[in-house]
Every structure is written in structure tokens, then in C-alpha cells.
Length: 398
Image (cartoon, rainbow, N blue to C red; front, side, top):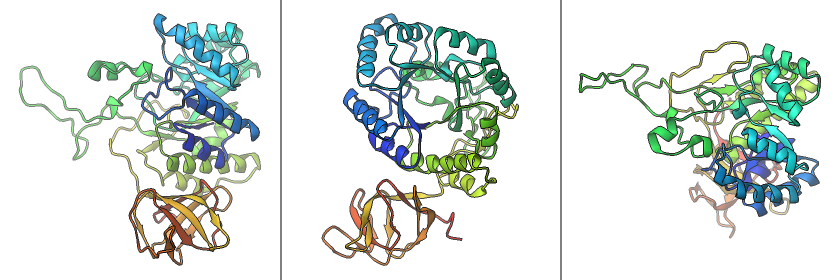
């Protein structure tokens, strides 16, 4: 289950093998600063996904106030009309409204509802919830016990990759307190990622809790990466494997979906663990990785607030041109003729190539590819497809 903060990221996620996508509308979701989708775009996404036999779930997981319900009802009616596959909700009142008045929409309970045990899960199943997105704080043992207790009466969903909120399953007031932007209504400014110092009331000078040269990051969390234990998560009874990241780029979505798609396929085929898919997750911007709470370890890493981003997303593929013997791309970051580039492809996999030449749309030879979104022809026999990615780095160049 992949995130999509825009239509381009939606198409990228499906191209790289997502079985389903979750997205948000212009209102009522918890990522107000993503591009998000208007109702026509949601309709386009749903229609396209259904032609591929895939699904689209819409986040409606704010904690609404009384004044919100008039527009919420209109919005839910529209989602039902365009045949969205389901909604992700967290508020009990909104959950009941969806279950009683919008029965064509499957109801998935958001992780914001903090489902931590089998009895809470069973309660929601009795209300009619089809899928429960488990709290990130659950261990694998807890998940397996919950799955066994439910006996298949509902699906369990769990996060497998991405940023982790320092607050309890996302219920946070820090953003509201510091910036007057309500994280529980989609306006989180990620204040937990800022640098902080410690002050004592009788002193003017602030004290620093030393962690590194940049300061202290006592509110930061590491990023989740479950690639090494993904087989255990599946074995515990999780039916939907969720990637966090509706604020992330096309490159992030494509690379991470591709890596987990291939790891899942390896697991289902009985193939042994291939370290290269973990290495792929190192090629996107990330903080230190952790498996979170799954192995029963409640500690979190907060050594650095600065994400590692060792690879530059240089271009997105438009398509292969047989007549001209090359691949058309749209530039994203600067690169030069003669550079050794890496590709990430849904069909061709990952690998290295050096274009024989680079031309613009008028056939002029280009040595310095520095214009963002310029369309370029990379002369190569590597037949890449639309939405494939090209980057600069040394993951496979060695």
C-alpha cells in the first residue's frame, strides 16, 4: 500500500508495483501540505487503478469538529459516487457515520485510533470496520496474538517504512502549541524535527544537551525500515503493508515501492533475503533506520536531525524512442555528458549506464544538463519506460 501526495506520485507508485494507493483530498486528511487531490483527480485515480485491478483508499482521518460534518457528508457522498474503495478514518463519530450512511465505502481504522490490543481490534470489527491500521507501538508478538484472536474477521494493516512520529501514534499537540497549526487536522509542521536547547529559569544562557555539532535532537525519531524483518511481519498476520510518505517525492515513492515490491515477491516465492533491496532504501533521503517497535524494543534513535540523501534524482523517464535509439527524460537535477548514471526500472530492475550522447528536443548536443524539467534524449540501448527513474550515485557503480 503506497502513498501518493499528487497524481504523478500516484502513477509512479502503480508503475513500480503497488497493489493499492492511499491519498488525501484537499481537506479532511492529515497531510494538508501535500499537493493532494481534488475530487476530479480522485476520480481519475480511482478509474485508472480499477482498470489495473488495483485499489484507492482516501484518508479522511482528521479529528473533526461539529462544524465539519456538513461538508464531510457531501465529500463522503462524492467518494461513494466515484467508487473509491474505502476511507481511512480515526474519529469514532465519523466512523459510525461512514458505516451507517455510506455503506459502499469500506471503512479502515486509522493508526490515529491507537489500536494496541486484540480486544480493541475486536470492538472495531463488531462496529463493521473492514481493516485496522495498527498502532506503530505494537510488537510482532502482539500483532500475531491480535490476528489469531480476530480469526480473519478483519484485515490488519501495519506501517513498514517511513518517518515515525515522536508522539503516541501521531496524537501530538506540539505543532499547535508552537505554531498554532493543528497536527490533528492536517497541519503538522514537524516541530519535533527542530533543534532545541535546554534553559534554566535563573540563567540567561541556554544549555545545550550535546549530541553533535548541530545541537540536540531529543524529540527526533529515526525512520522505519522493516526490509530485514518483512517476512516476520507477513508471518504475524499483517495483510496490508503500508509505506509512509504522502509528502515525499516521485523518486522516493518509486524507489521504495520498487524495493518492497521485489522483496515481497521474493518472500512469496520462497527466495532467500537479498541485501540489495535494503541497499536500495539507502538511496533515498532518510534518517537513521530502525525496525521500530516490532522486535519489542521501545527505544528510538535521535542522534541526528539531518537526513542522509546520498543520491541525486537526475531525471524521470518519459519513454524510449526506438527510431532515435535513446530514452527521453525530463531533467530533475544537474548532470553532465559522460556521467555514469543509475536507473531504477519496474521491468529492467536497477543498473548502471553511461549515455553515448545527450540531445535536446531540437537535436542539439547537450554537455551540461542544468535546466530543470528540460526534455532530453539520452542515447542508450537501455530500454526504460515511462515513470522509471534515473539518478547519480555509486550504489551499483562499484
